[in-house]
Image 1 (cartoon, helix red, strand yellow):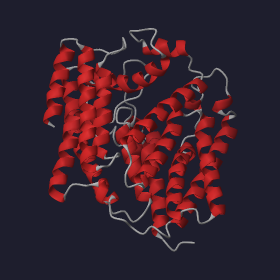
Image 2 (cartoon, helix red, strand yellow):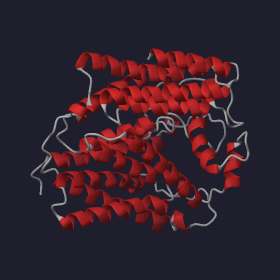
Image 3 (cartoon, one colour):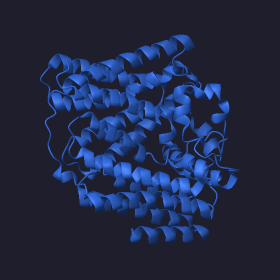
Length: 427
């Protein structure tokens, strides 16, 4: 932690002196160091604190490079918020480790998971069926499929029916459940195996037809994480290869969404106009989110005291339609088209830097609890819960995951499959 604090202070001073490359490189080095420490000590490539350190601090380092004209110097309060976010997460996790013992993947207890394959199989079939029906209803009602539209960059944005779309996108859970099914079942039933594979293909086809970059990447990410969690040792290079694959998928789906290079360059306003789009786009979808947070800090007139973070409650209960004042708050961003945020955007919107700190403390505690439980897991769906939480920490630079109703819908569906698998003799 001492090295990180020194690096952070150095990055701040470099940024104040407008040596942005040095500021960014220092934080990128710190992010790699933080990940390596936890990975080396635990042997777990998906150590939750390691992932958060690598991607939260690393994303901040990328943003500090200031490669776009949209990016402005951050206020002192913004720098403090970013520091508090990681520091509180780290301290919460570390304190619990001191109190209850460190979690080490290499000493994972083995558990008998036989009998849970029936619940996994039912979950794969049920989610695939419901998601497919929901997708067909949306396509028929709206009269189009986004993949087959031509020259319409935002076709997916309008492809949803309120409430029903949650069921459509639940398909992203199927590939990871399939991975867990094969881990437990070990190929003893070839007919079931073929059906599970078919369901996985259908579930990956839905986000492709929707031209949803995030849903496809998220489905693959959860499946990869679930596979990693069922192994005792995973080399860190495998994780790096998976990250490269995610970027490649993102670029390919960008082409399918009719977002041409001139359109994107006009939005991103890069300082070097000749920078390749396959570098520019991932960079901006990481880096600009920190600048959106800085916009919030500079422009927010008053805090909302919990209303923003309770949005899943307003959305899933339908209260947002009855009381629109619960959700009608402006969003502060550098540019209208760039609306992705960070994990702590709504926490600051509600309670300022105090909200960021408390939220980070809670996340650190949950991360420790999940790592402690996964070492003695008795229900394979627990791996999927862990994988989801890991994905949200990995993508901490991208969105306010825990004030997104879709996130909680995924957790609800996962919990239902968890209950099914808990009934080991279920037929």
